[in-house]
Image 1 (tube, rainbow, N blue to C red):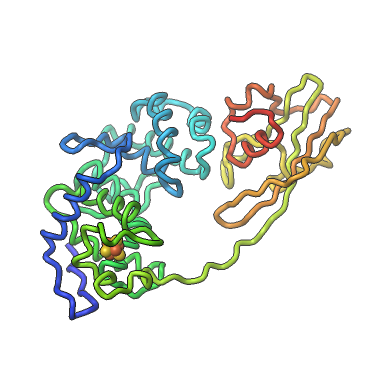
Image 2 (cartoon, rainbow, N blue to C red):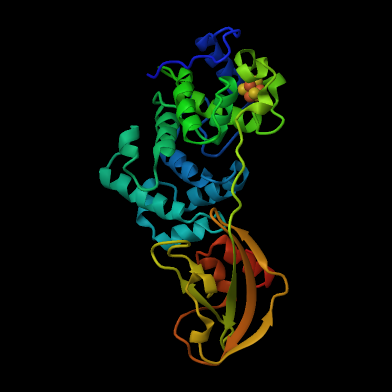
Amino acid sequence: MPSSPVFVNSDITQPDVPILRERLLDWYFACKRTMPWRAEIGKTPNPYHVLVSEFMLQQTTVQTVIPYFERFIERLPTIEALAQTSLDDVYTLWQGLGYYSRAKNLHKAATQICDLNVFPQDIETLKTLAGIGPYTSASISAIAFDHPTMPVDGNVMRVMSRLFAIAEPKGTKLQEQSQEAVHIFSGKQDNTHSAQALMELGALVCKPKNPLCDTCPLSHDCQAFQTQSVDQFPILIAKAAKPKRVATTYVITNQDGHVLLMKRPDKGLFSNMFIFPTTCFDFDPGALPNLTILKQHTKPIKHVFSHFDLELTVVCAETAEAITGIWVAPGDLPQYGMPTLMHKVTKALKITDH
Ligand code: SF4
C-alpha cells in the first residue's frame, strides 16, 4: 500500500487514520443517498448493476442516470441478456444519455465478461475490458468486490486536494497525489463503503463552491479548512475556449411522409447511431436530386460536445425522388437509437417529444 501523504502544514496534528475513516463511514451510513445500483448496508452489491452504473455515470449526473438505469435493467436484467442483445437495442435504451461510445463499450465489455465465464474482480483484468480504464476498474473492484483500492473521480480529487492541501493545479499531478493520498481510507473491509463515501462526500458536502465544512466529518483533520484556505483548493487553471462549428441538418420527407435517416459508421462521433442527414457528418445536400426546401427553422440549435460547440441550423425539405435510404415514419423514430442532438431537432420541429 502506498505511504500516507505528508501533511503540508506541520502545525496541524497528523490525522488518526482509523478515526478519520470511522468518521467518514459513520457519516456515509447516516447520509448516503439511495441509488438503484447501490446495495443496502449489509447486502452484497450486484457487479452487473455496478458495471452498468459506472458506464452511465461517466460525464453524467446521478439524477439523470437513475431513470435510464432502471429502464436498462428492467429490459436487460443480467449481463447475459446484455451480451445477447443487439447493439441497436442498447443504443435505443441509451438514447438521450449522450456519449454513445459508452453504450458500445458496455455492450462489448458484457460480451467479454460472458466469454470469460466469470466476472473479473481485480483491476488488471477489468482494465482489459472495453471502455474500462484505471478509474472504472478501481471503482468496480472496490464497490462490487470490496477490494482495497480507492477510485479517484473529480469529487474525490477535490476532497483530497483540500484534506491534504495538495498545491497542484487540476491535472495529472493532482490525480497522482490524490491517488496516493486516498489509500489511507482503504482497509481490510468496508472498501465498498469507503470508496462510495468519499464520492458521496465530494458530491454532497465538499462541493466545488460553498462546501458545507461545518457538517463535514473530515473537517477536524482537513488542512484547507483548518487554515481557512478552502477556496484555494483545488488550484484552478483557466480553460481554453472551445472551437465553434456550424452545420445544417436536413429533415427530408418523401411522398409517404417518412423521414430520411442515415446510419453513422462504426467509428467516430455517434458511431452506429441514426441521424438526420447533416453537413458536418458527411452529408452533401447537393448529392440529392430535386430536393425542395420547405422551411428553415428560425432558431439554430446549440449543442456542446467535449471538444467543440456546435450551432446547428435545421432545414425541412421534401423530395419526390425514390431515394434509397432509411425512411422512417415519424412515429417510429423513438425505435431508432438517435443521439441527443437529433432529439433536440425532433423536439424543435415537434416531430416527437421523446
Ligand atoms: S472540511 Fe470542508 S474542505 Fe475539508 S473536506 Fe470537509 S467539506 Fe471539504
